Amino acid sequence: MAQELVVTQVAMMAREEIELAFVAAGWEVAGRSSPHLVAANAGGAPLSIRAYGPFVAVSDGQAFELIDRLLELTYWVRVVPTPRVAWVLIHEYGGAPGMERGKPNKRT
Image (cartoon, rainbow, N blue to C red; front, side, top):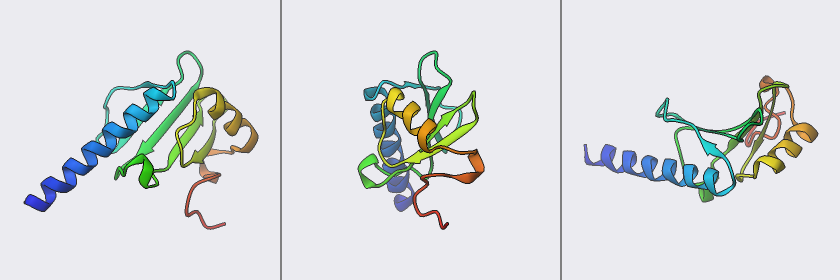
C-alpha cells in the first residue's frame, strides 16, 4: 500500500511538472479528462501537444506527441517546444499518426 502511494505521488508530481512545462512554452493546458493523458493546445491554432502516462519527469525522458489536428500530422519530441517551433517540426518532419515519426525507441 505504501509503495502504491509513493508511485502515485511521483506520477502526480511528474504530471504537474509536464503541465508547468507546457504553460511555460506557451501552450494552454486542456482540462484533466484522463489520468493517463496531459494535453495542451496552441491558442487558436489547430496544434496540440500530448504526454501519455505513465508520467515521468520531463528531465527523465518523457516523450511528447505534437499534433496538427487540421492536417492530421504528428511528430514526437523529447522536449516541450513552443507552439511555433512545434508547427515547424510537424510540417518538416511529421507524418500520419500511425507512422510515429520521431517517436523514441521506435524500431524502423
